[in-house]
Length: 342
Ligand code: ADE
Ligand code: ZN
Image 1 (spheres, rainbow, N blue to C red):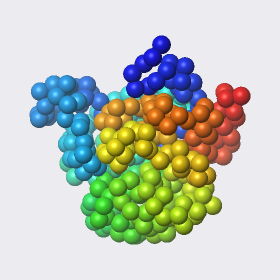
Image 2 (image 1 turned 135 degrees about the vertical axis):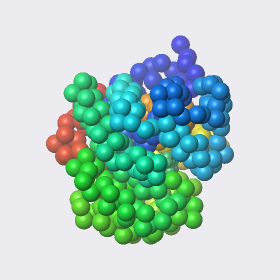
Image 3 (image 1 turned 90 degrees about the vertical axis):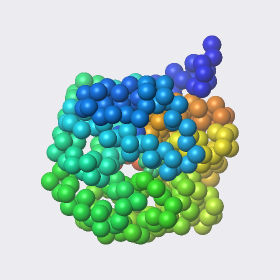
């Protein structure tokens, strides 16, 4: 039996049953059209779309910016603690069904604080849903606070100061939004403050931006993982450095396709990255907008590039090893994966 997009059912079942971590996921990017309308109705927000079908039709992007414009507009329906709880609960349910043992999720505080929705509102909603999901289905999760790079470095510093009462619930900091012309060096001060407070640094780099932004994320921000990083192959010295350090790359194939980073999934360099010895992980980025959650990404890329089950398991192992959970917990998940793949 064949299924659309996700290839054969055996492959989909194998992927869904495989223990994995999701390390590149924007929680605001999990806002499905159905919930968009539900929250707009609840909060009296007028949407520029007639119905869910019109929303889906608008999700046709030409580049990162064309997506971000719609994505920030959608986030405006998120207003109350209950809204953030519902968004988080729905994603964690979905991730659990995809075999995710650990989810490390980005959130964009500036997208909310600029609308006068404060840290208390979204942090209380997120953390309550995360605790309930762990109690109900055992999924482990953590939050990574992203700075918006189209805003100044000083705004990132102010955001970090505003988060200071909430750091117990935040494991790391990240850098997202429009990449080109917004180099990582602008955010060195905010990252220095975050690292001094014990937060783990990661950063988007080399999605649309040049390999120099990956080098900048490593050197100026101390990034421990690179989000996307697919343009690293344009600089062989950088590839050698990433291989030597085994710096994880959180690659998002369906995102790269939807945002025209690649024209065809068959052209994606994920297999070449793996073959080069890079620590590649597979993730969904903004699944409500890009047509697939994490298991869909594994299946789509396996189908397009002819990845073997061993290669898929290597990506899952990389994800578990690259997550920021305690070492003993990571070892237990890797052992579970080893037992699964035999
Ligand atoms: N925010 C949400 N998704 C993003 C992506 N893929 N790149 C940069 N910023 C983002
Ligand atoms: Zn992203």
